[in-house]
Image 1 (tube, rainbow, N blue to C red):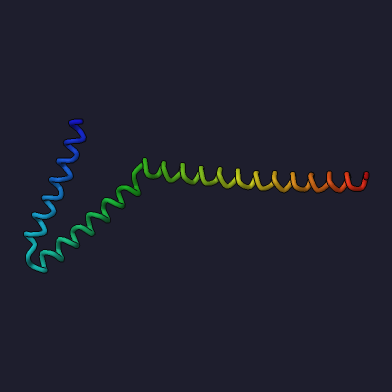
Image 2: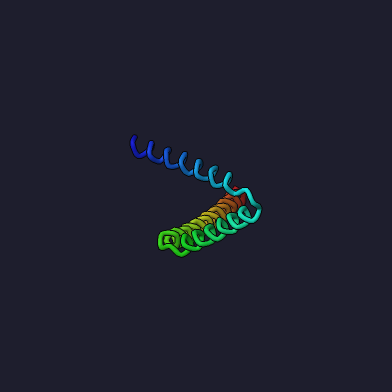
Length: 98
């Protein structure tokens, strides 16, 4: 419970910090600079995440899973078609025998 409470305090503190910074940015120049700084931070963080090993591993696992799902769907489709052909063939043979 203490960790959850700490996390909540961190979120509240971050919100308070953001409000404080927004209030201190009274000039348009400062606001523009702050925005550009945030964009730069976002790009940097995004690039770090893309290059990280866990992200690359997750992407590879997703590709593998997608490939396996596609193969399973193809196999199921082929099986259904084969069963339909066999049923038609059996029905035709049965009708001819009658």
